[in-house]
Image 1 (spheres, rainbow, N blue to C red):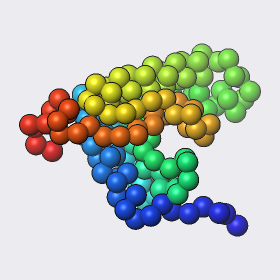
Image 2 (cartoon, rainbow, N blue to C red):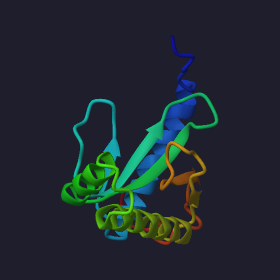
Image 3 (tube, one colour):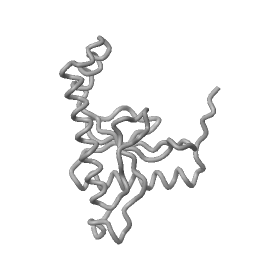
Image 4 (cartoon, rainbow, N blue to C red):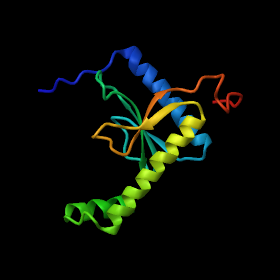
Length: 144
């Protein structure tokens, strides 16, 4: 039996609102985005935004870069075959690392508090702690 508990409804609503703002800013930067939801099918390549609903230190808003399914499948196959130094694994990891850093740069520029996640279950994710305010958003006059 699991001890998992959802965060209170108001906290989840705040996280969803933050995720909406993150998604909008990344899209304004030209980044393809998708939201992870319990009931949706997997989306294509781009920034995948997750609202972790947990009532624990791991809860919050996370962004992870998702490579094209062909590269992802090649890296997974290499790992499953014990080929940990395969070019597909190195290339996939390098892309994930550079895109994580680019996403952090975009979000910080837009006024968010964002940093590399220290969650070992999300090693190449971005954790977003706070949203841009109307005063410091570079696109405050653009409609949502």
